Amino acid sequence: MLPDKQLIDRVRKIIAITHKNVEEKKMFGGVCFMVNDKMCVGVRRERLMVRFDPSILDEVMEIEGCRPMDFTKKVMKGYAWVDIEALGTKKKLEYWIKLALEYNKLAKPSKKEKGQ
Image (tube, rainbow, N blue to C red):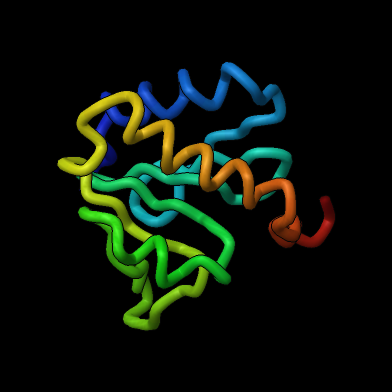
């Protein structure tokens, strides 16, 4: 499945307003935005992957269009999929990106490959 290019562009524009240390990597069958060397949000076909504070899981799962991320058939705590239909407005997309960026400040950096 190819990632949604329009959604990638929308995410890129929102993140670029406030963050300079952003890297785009291919993963999870789409594009992941690494902010300050930490996984933040990702775009996969017709959905957004969001990394958030696991302590607010119940609150996040109540939001329409959101479901647990179970990429490996196991629920990943602090990650969710948000259906593209729930991201129709700029305000809705900004909500999810802001949620991920807030947690990004607290999150541990992704593990570096050996030799880096």
